[in-house]
Image (cartoon, helix red, strand yellow):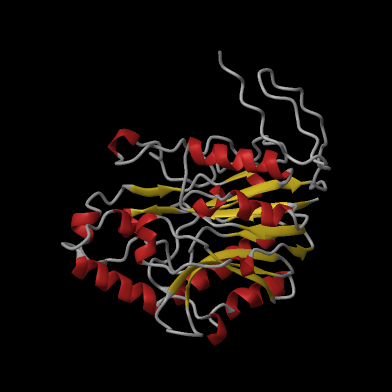
Length: 348
């Protein structure tokens, strides 16, 4: 039995050093509450490039170039040791950390970015680094393609952990690659939210007979830096939720577990705004409160959630069953006999 902390806090947007420093503090807070597994959202370092869903091709090219240059400059180079503070924090507190980040290629062009997620062991070592296989829609203007070499499940004190990022969770063969390795804890860092996404995670929990942890991105317009290009045009409402998070823990079989508390634990008032102002389908808010002793929070943002204590069970055995025959279908052919096409019926 152990606790898992899902950090639903914004990064220091477009600032790698400060975001990593904040991640280290979140790890320490979670450890103080007894967590042994800490999960951050998709591309937490230095941020998810949400502007790609608002900028227009061609006419916004100059803004796109400025933002991409800053993202490139603040992305993580693993070989340079950028993740060392986070690895040291995992080692110091003897816990496992899963964190999404923008990764800068260091082997070839040194100009390609990847949407990556890393699993850091309790000894501070990097157990696995996975690159998102197929960036979604405009994400392809930011990130390159990953490959299947990093579809790995790793052993941790919490259990066998595997990760897929956001909409690559819709890929059946990618999921199967993890299931086939004895997956116990399925972690899905994401920018998505809402009923459809939560339903996807519930389906994965049923399909894989595993625990599923959805770690969502939370960000408001006020979290953007003052020198963010075209901020007044792109994000005029300082109180707008760019993304609300919608993190969740789901038990094997699809039963909803823990979700962040939308009202208590140091939250500012007025969190329930009118969602009709949003330009996309509104996600449902995090409605299920956690134990007060199990939250890490600030007065400004939704609490990081500690869902636990959680008792993890081994994945259920694969069931074998015989399906009833479907009416109207031809009888099954004996595969040991050669195939012969049916004789055409004679006509008179």
